Image (cartoon, rainbow, N blue to C red; front, side, top):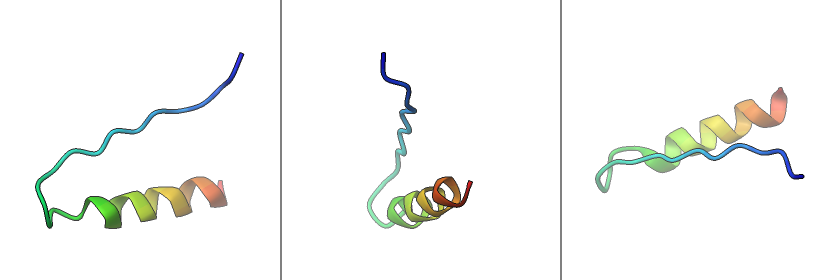
Length: 31
């Protein structure tokens, strides 16, 4: 069985989704 996490980020164009996902990715990589 695979273990993982699913993260969904919703928002309009220009809302900062990519920025938030990059920050979240960096946080998970450091953890």
